[in-house]
Image (cartoon, rainbow, N blue to C red):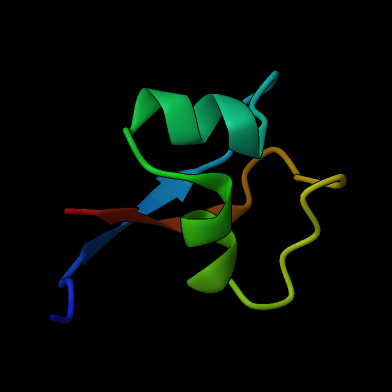
Length: 55
């Protein structure tokens, strides 16, 4: 069974981390990384827009 996700854009704010965002939006770091190819989780830039997968 295939799961469907909605993607919504999120603008990185000061202090954000993928771990924090995964907790906040009830998803996983792996899920965020899979919909943002090339994203460097150790170098998030304030103002950078990433996609957050939501069920």
